[in-house]
Length: 63
Image 1 (cartoon, rainbow, N blue to C red):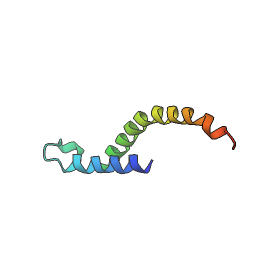
Image 2 (image 1 turned 30 degrees about the vertical axis):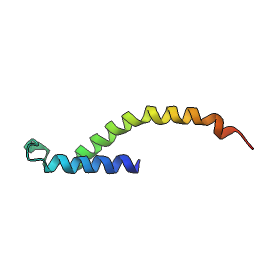
Image 3 (image 1 turned 90 degrees about the vertical axis):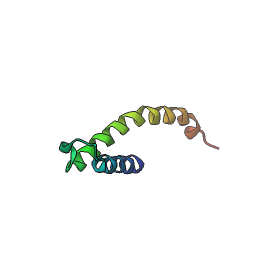
Image 4 (image 1 turned 180 degrees about the horizontal axis):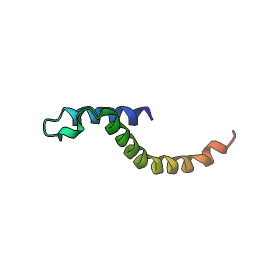
């Protein structure tokens, strides 16, 4: 989650500082960051679920 948040915040900073960005985006840092966090979360959630499903049998084995 920390990586997603930092990535979204960095992307927001680049977007806001872009001279070609539309004017209505300026001052909307929090909103843009939250949208990007939601998008990145939606992308990574299915992958994370699949990895955990694959790892579950290994986690339940006891030595």
